[in-house]
Image (cartoon, rainbow, N blue to C red; front, side, top):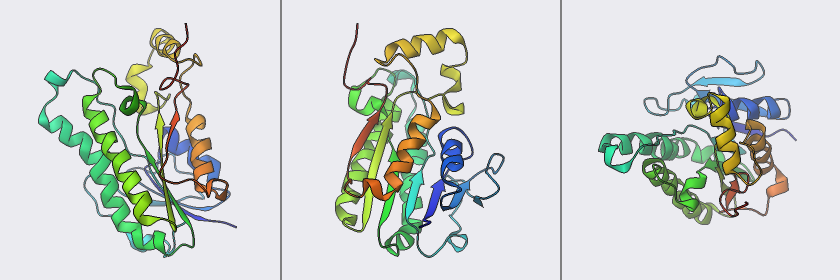
Length: 231
């Protein structure tokens, strides 16, 4: 049975991989700034989470899956981060998320069983230097997700994926030459960086009935970085 899935973001990286994976299986709606790489069988909704209100008239009355992909990677020493930098990360990672969920909560409740998939970062659990701004924002996402999972159960499931560095346009400046890729790969016990498909495969799982007994979880997909060390 086809589901109605709303993806916030999705024009590149993990979002693009996800759209290509699920667009033939479900009725997919992608709300993002650009439709440059949106497949033809995906319903495009122009949406900038920082500046726009989501046009819910273009979305079905019942939504079975919701994925929020917009994020940032703002890595600098705490002393050089302005208050505005913290506010910007909070706006895109947390406030934009809250605004988007509020816009479609009625649609999610109209489904017999719906799934919300959100994103954190390995740095919230692991504790890493120069990650204070993004960790603060994503820590808020994790707290919000657990609260919403409790409040929305049993009808709406809420889970969070916490990845390490994934080879996407957002991470390009950290992976734009072979030396950077090798150094990053060696930090991970599985000795490689993440690929968009590593994440989109699990989003697909969380949107499906295969994960129907999961909610309120923070799932680390990070090459083992958050939990183990190897020589």
